[in-house]
Length: 99
Image (cartoon, rainbow, N blue to C red; front, side, top):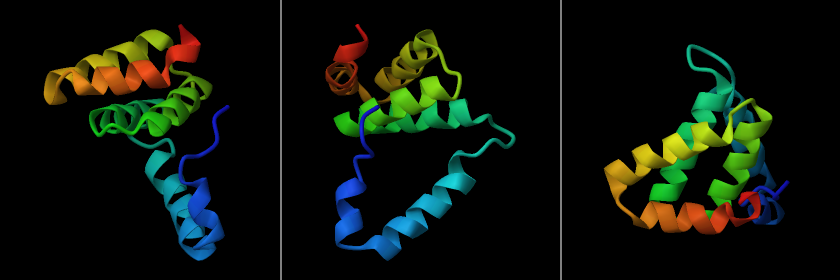
């Protein structure tokens, strides 16, 4: 599994990274939306913003949380529709290993 793309910040600001880790539990935990849906939303945002490492990390986390590759593909369709083809370039590079 790819490492967390924010891992490098731990060395310079471990207190902030602990805060992020604790907030992730609230943000990505099961609630009205299941964890896997929240991860797909985040993946679409990262694809739209060109965060290749984030897409890779979130795709693996989403699959671990029960998402299918078809659900990832459909999340990327929405990202494309709202943000354009650039998100598909980002996602394609991030997901090359899955093809």
